[in-house]
Image (tube, rainbow, N blue to C red; front, side, top):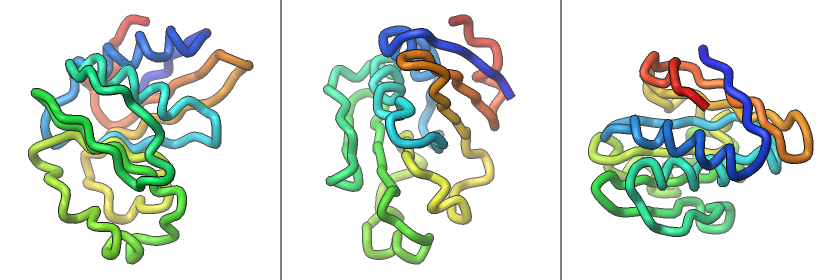
Length: 146
């Protein structure tokens, strides 16, 4: 487990871009954190670090937003999913997990279907703009300098 701190949305994006630069096909990033914690902001940084130029937006109303480039990112919002059974009707299992990166908000709702090697990122508000970011599940993210 690695713990990082950021003091602004800009710092969060900058830090997340370092995480994004380390992503590879097949990675699953599962967020934990309440409303307004900064999950979508963090995803903006991941996309930048992965070399994507698309404008990242919250997938709340779309369930999934797709960002394509050298590394495709599928950004899911599971807020309204109550169980793994609900996923069957969303098409979740039809997305190419081995050929892309999955980034999942509200992953708590589908924990039982996440791969064993899922990287969990918990984002906690510690102030108006400051965040504590906890990364678990892969040593590749243990020594990022922020």
